[in-house]
Length: 361
Image 1 (cartoon, rainbow, N blue to C red):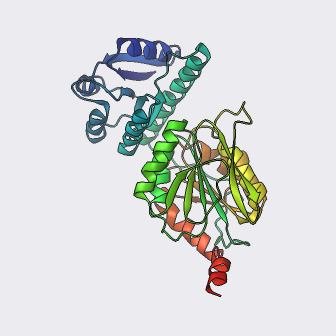
Image 2 (cartoon, rainbow, N blue to C red; image 1 turned 135 degrees about the vertical axis):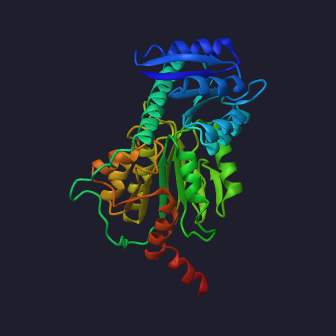
Image 3 (cartoon, rainbow, N blue to C red; image 1 turned 180 degrees about the vertical axis):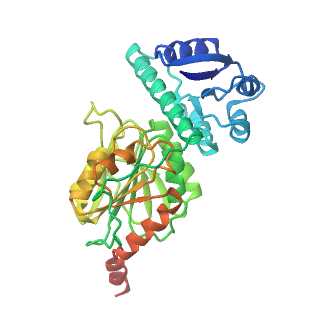
């Protein structure tokens, strides 16, 4: 039984979340709290497996409560977030403080949307519980089949011209860890695809731009891809890359509309593999599900380089796991080493040397 504490100042939200969660026979709402102060007391008393936490509450708000929970307790927290720009900024702050993930506060929408939120809520509570179990009782890491993950020197056969990163749960913080460690003269463009709505991707790009030596922007239709720039895939729509004259540019499209995720890691990675082939570098990071498997497979088949975050440093070892198990990853890398490994591979491939010598002459 997964024991959940719901923290929200709205009786409507407390009731709605409890009803959603207890539609799963393996989830039990053990108590509710009206603000952060009550939440701290009830976490201390009940020791729940997972907490859902509203952000705007009286007496002690969700962010301040989260800081105390991260310091004093070992319990994953799911933030309940509005999709406004202010909600996005507060949620991104919560994720940087250590919140497990977030769920949208959209229970007044159409029934089909509410059912999707319920499905997402249950999936994330289950993932948070599994992560807690893994931390409380560490198990041996996944053993890769013989002949699976390669450990060569990783000297690319072609200069790397593009890097694409895919992530979901835990992704905003993991991408931040990588991008903020890369130098300002990084010689190639970087595409970042994280499962987030549009207001979140815009706020995330702005936040990352303030922290990074690189320029960080949200994707726009028709924008040219430039070295030393990070392009965060806009939420609610797919990001493709297409050849444009002597270079490459971004194309945004709602198609395919039946995709489980928009933006989809697979969609972007498949377009990168198609346009750049062996000049591609694909990175798969922490996240639930298998989005990115097809894209990583195509980059691998095209002769590009593929890296996956290791299990120990993942918030959820889902997306990297399926890529490793399908033998489409050249190397598994701890998150704290990922930026160093990326830069080493890109520099070793000779990226940017042609352009540098052309400008020198």
